[in-house]
Length: 259
Image 1: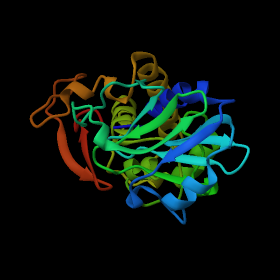
Image 2: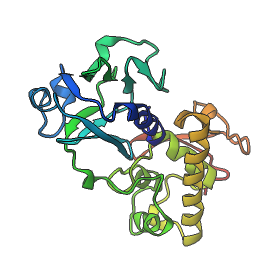
Image 3: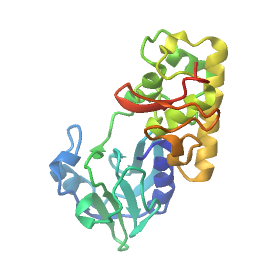
Image 4: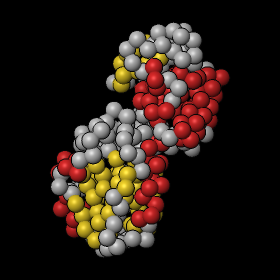
């Protein structure tokens, strides 16, 4: 399931496309184009443009061109292939199959290479000039002061607040559970109930989680991850984990040390 760390891997994989000219577009799926963008617009607009840069905001990958910005979202199962190679061979909770029938969008370049989104569940999307202002600050870069403001005056569960992409961009289900578990904070607590000390602990935990799991290879490499199953026990203290819905997402947490 692509979260901030996976999209950063995709951004790095897309870097070799900078300076290349788009020759053609493969956009067979109306469902996969978002906002006001249509397959016909992609096919009419992108050929002849030069990729000038790659960026990431949270879970949104952006390809700058000498025309519109191309925004790529990957949902839960989308992978990026560049010149036939996948920077991530398999995603957690996705299919083991590698089927070109799942290619929802792609561009070919004049030099013969290509860039493709392969997405079994069709939960990602493509958009021209996506509204970047709808996203909060990137979780990998947010400092403590704005992080504190994100949590303040919100009665939503702290997990839901962390995963609200309009408030904080990039945190998905696995990263959020891991950061809260490391910080010892109950994911169901109202965000506004955290005191200044707890906010500081959570901010450090989030940044540490991103750094450590980034070095390990992705959002699925957390210390909590092997125990994310019914009857799983906390790796810290052996307590049976609670499994419940928080903010619409299946959540695992330890009732002993997460308060």
